Length: 60
Image (cartoon, rainbow, N blue to C red; front, side, top):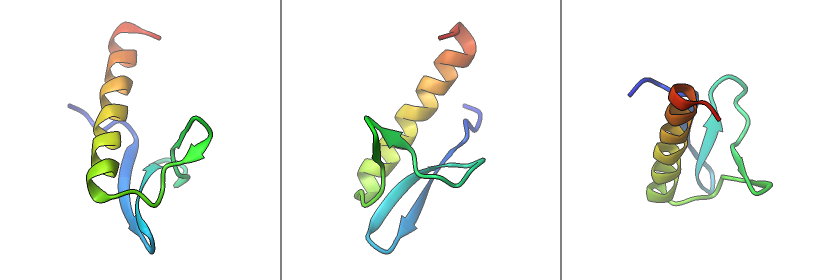
């Protein structure tokens, strides 16, 4: 699957999911996705990439 513009980075307090182009944390329901366990961050990253792929292939 091609890269979809999200990445996981380690921070002082846990892990976060970030938008590659801006470096800003991803927000879900208005909450920054930082301070996560590595497993949660990787799962969220995978879900975001799948959603981005579906949108690119089939539209919104």
